[in-house]
Length: 228
Ligand SMILES: Nc1ncnc2c1ncn2[C@@H]1O[C@H](COP(=O)(O)OP(=O)(O)OP(=O)(O)O)[C@@H](O)[C@H]1O
Image (tube, rainbow, N blue to C red; front, side, top):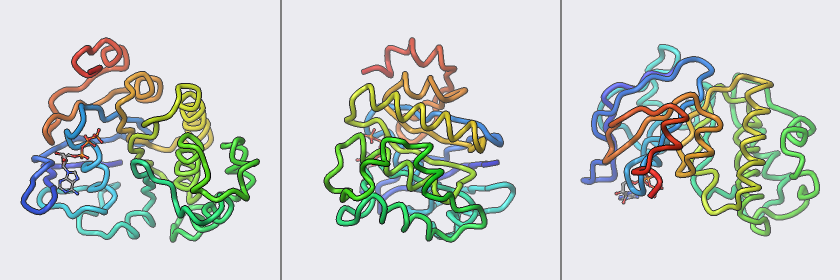
C-alpha cells in the first residue's frame, strides 16, 4: 500500500533521511527501530507531510503524495500519533476526541462509544483536561484520536516513551484490537524492542537516515546493539 523510494528530507541544511527506500504491504505492521537521533521521527513526519520531502517519492496505493499537504494525506487515510503528543492540553478528553472526529476523511468516523470500547480506560477520563492526564493516559488519548477517522495506515511515533510496562501492554492490546476490527496497516517507530516485536511482522533498522538492516521479531529481541 505504501512505496517509499529514495526519500530524502531534513531540517534546513541538515539532511537526515538519505535516499531511503522501503515498501509496506496492505494491512502490514512494520517496525522502525534505531538508536536516538537516527531519523525515525523525521521519517514519520515526512510520510505524514509535516516535513517537506527534499527528494524521492512516496506512493500511497499508486498515488504520489510526496507533494501533498498533511491534511490531504489524512483524507487519504493516513493517521499519525506524534512523539509526546498530548492533543489540545486545555480541552477535555471528550473534546479532543470530538475534534479528531472533524478530520476530513473519506472513511468512517468512529463514534465515541466505539472508541471507548477500544480504549476502556478513557471512559472515566472523558471530562478531564488532557493536560491533567498521566503520560500513559496521554499516549492512549493520542492513539484514540488518531483512530477516530478510521485510518488505513497508522504512523505511531514512540508511543511507549517514558511510560510504565503495564501501560505499554495496554497500548499493545489496543493496537491488536484495532487490527482485529479493521486490519489497519501500521508503521511503529519505537525504542521498546519487545513492544515492536509483539506487534510487527518485521522491523527496519534505521541508522543515520538510512535503512541498514531488516529484523524478524525474534532477531529484534536478540539484537544487543539495538538494546543500548
Ligand atoms: N527541528 C529540528 N531541527 C534540526 N535538526 C533536527 C530537528 N529535529 C531533529 N533533528 C535532528 O535530526 C536527526 C534525527 O532526529 P529524529 O528525531 O528523526 O531521530 P529519532 O531516531 O526519532 O530519535 P529519538 O529516538 O531520540 O526520537 C537528529 O540528529 C536530530 O538532532
